[in-house]
Image (tube, rainbow, N blue to C red):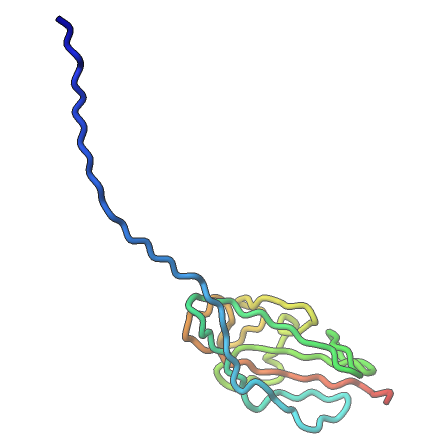
Length: 147
């Protein structure tokens, strides 16, 4: 007489719920324009009001800044003929002209904020969602204009 081996099996099932939240990066800037007004050639002026940059996404974000050429002027590290310079820093109050350093010089390429670049009393590094930074600008006008 032959015996067949018996296999005992047990089945158990469970349920797991998975949730995924996609990273959503978004900022708002208010106001989204600023006018320095009439500025003499070969002079420097600092903005009198800040532009508030708010992280209205759902994750921390590091702010990247850049400038742009105009139709008649070129953005440069130092002013020249038809060349201007533009600086930016994050600070809670209006900075003095000498608070802006070479790390704060805008270029036509995007640059990430660091603890020293674009940083005054505030910085644009890993800004948590719903947090704000106050961006101030310094404009150095061309030394002369050809047209």
